[in-house]
Image 1 (cartoon, rainbow, N blue to C red):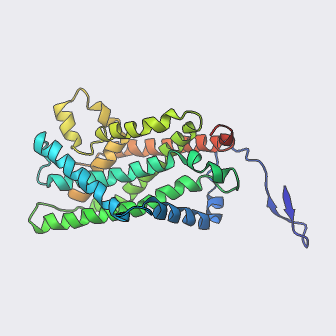
Image 2 (cartoon, rainbow, N blue to C red):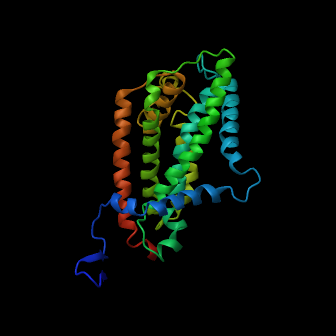
Length: 289
């Protein structure tokens, strides 16, 4: 369909079928930036709109999880966190991990949740998972603020805490985590349109992945205690992100340049594969969702 200006022979708009298998449509996403901001606002407001505690759930979840990990893994299991207080060690890993899981779970059912909207009006479909990643940055900011509060608390109490210059690259690390969650989420969302089993397996898979991502223990500990199975963590790109985040925030552990390079390549690969499948699925998902 074409829309012609009555006073000019030039085409104003040209609506044609999408023939490209791969298309990021950054220009089109920018044109729909107001809609993107509207979806971001919707994601923030509607999640806890009818709850009593509201945004306080952003704080309760990481705090209680950190307390539980501290009791089980540090007090009972005896995992040593060095000079860093165990609670702060766990809170740092959980805060970063929560951003990844929020991006993954929020984008993994894009087609199923937004089927009614997708079937009625056109807009770049990638806006919906992208809005989830952006809105979760606000949630991450709130949880990171809580981490800073406890960091200052332990520092005032005399804990041996220090920062290093690598903290300047922490936003890049967060962006890498978001892109990885977005890529995996788009991939799973495309599969869910045909195979609903993935939506049921996702929760279990995330729990299992958390234990393989060095969230509650240093990577060096697993290499020391269980060298036979340490490859399960070493080939997990999320483990390098968590380990690097703790090094930046708490100056504990180490940064693996090779590990970060591997993580970057995996993240880029997962994102582009997810986008390819996402673009292909959006053309015919309405018949199967």
